[in-house]
Length: 270
Image: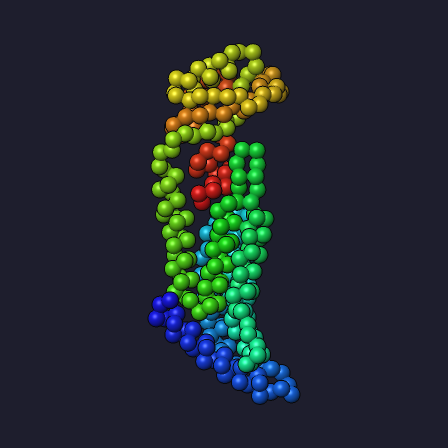
């Protein structure tokens, strides 16, 4: 813990000692007053959580993910409030024969966020969406807990590292070569013109292995057509194959599903 965090925690300790003494002296009324010596510090921690989690939530909102600004801010504020209550909310009942474990509620925050994070993960036919968003919800809870415990420097550093990972590191990782890339390409072409043979031949010449996932006949713009889903395996991006495919006679439409950088994918590195 840094010197700043230690000083902050020390201030909270002194404030809540005062709260505890007042609580025991007012047995005939409310245990605590609405405004206490620690109210200012509590507001400070909540505002810090609000600001830090806003940065996390705005990033998800801009990318139009399932959990956006409101979700992340509320998760952070709730985690901060739970941590404050767990650590200091029961100071008035402490006594020689009463012992409390401040970590119990904090531990349940982690478990509860796991269920919330699972709710934003969706598995489609060929891609899993929402893993990164679920992780950011978890980070927002951690930021709230850090601020609620008085470790503001930890919350700030965690938020900065989170943003650096998503804005700086993730784009670099996506540009790194991978051992194998496997993507699904949807191709629509005129039926009965030997287009499939040309498609497979072109893919082979560019170093791609292919496997047909699904094929169905449809009514195209210029007569009967075939809509086919083909999986391409190769060491280069599948999107490099799209322009040559579109130039083949009879090919009407080509779309890539799950390609890295494709806006239709909830890229799990983002």
